[in-house]
Length: 108
Image (cartoon, rainbow, N blue to C red; front, side, top):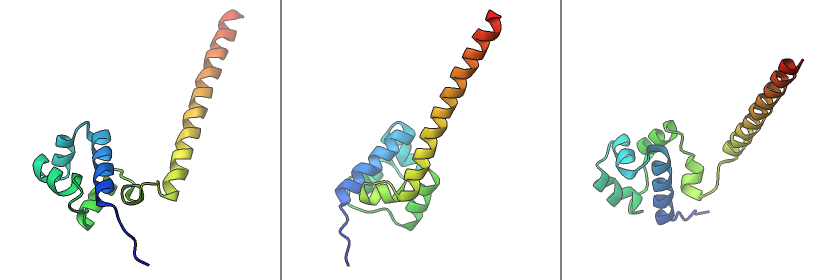
């Protein structure tokens, strides 16, 4: 079975990841070891797909490669995202309980 990859969509997701991570394309391109113009022309335009060395670098930066290539999070990352949400929720609840304890102890 042959999988068709949409290079334009991959380029757009690559841009989305880079801007989210570095604030702009220039910072992202430099972090990837490219000039902004060559990075734009080759990868962000969808002309070329990232090869193994770039994929390894993207992984180190926290990019979900499954999302990059196919547009949906990898199953492992969904679990990680769910755990992050649960952790944030628990920390918020802990903070609320600490505020309530402080109010009670100051009121007594």
